[in-house]
Length: 91
Image 1 (cartoon, helix red, strand yellow):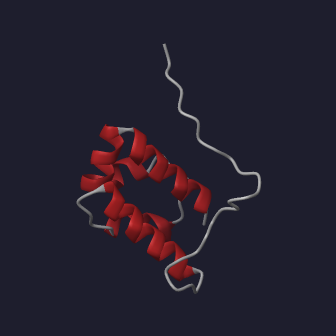
Image 2 (tube, helix red, strand yellow):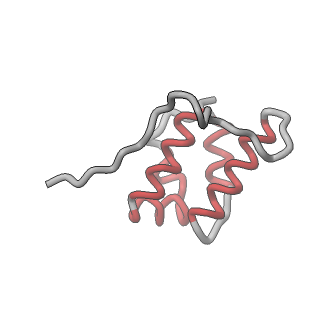
């Protein structure tokens, strides 16, 4: 299972309105483009949400619970080096 792929899906949902709408209304349509195992696909398809924020919250809760956590798990190093998403305009 790849948290990186799941995070990429959520980032794409934030910046691409068409992808976001499809993820929220018919996730199976867009999930085939990603390298997900069967469990991840099932979870992403089963999440029902009215907003990308609600969808992300439910996905995050599942990700933390599968690690045996309490619903919160920091997946980044806030003071260390990390990959960042920089959005630039394309002319």
